[in-house]
Length: 205
Image (cartoon, rainbow, N blue to C red):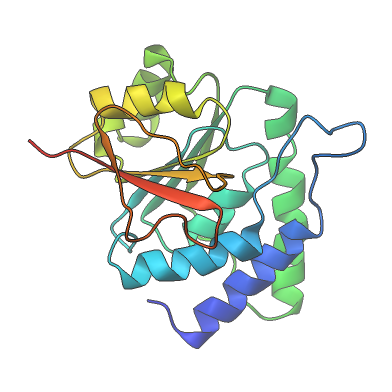
């Protein structure tokens, strides 16, 4: 699953999006983009640890322009994203088209057709019913959840309440002090990956 060709392609995808980052400065300073080259190093470890694989279902709970979903699409069975700001989500298709043209020119594998993005509130039960209706995945079907350090507390409560036992919650953007969440156990042996990604597992039983 994680061979040299896959790693080469994922590295290309990560660099493509990282060269188009937004946030911290400028007119879109309120936005934050995950550093995909750093996230890619974390993903390699996740695959090695058996926490991410071809049967995994992934949900980005604040997907922005969908860049994390594109990266995850190569390694998961389904890569689903939810974004509240519709105008941000509108950037997904143009960016993906540019990426695909670049990948074709470099003779690399295009992103699989397993990316599903939805406009709405990731905590909205009605939206999750729509996701289940449209692609056949209920909230409880997801194995891995992801968020930048925005609304992480709200998302953690939803995951603790409705996700299946053993589900993983990935929180990007942490620092030295890692958050704690009721019903979710910090995976201390893995966190923080690359100094920026904390992993939590929903308690079993």
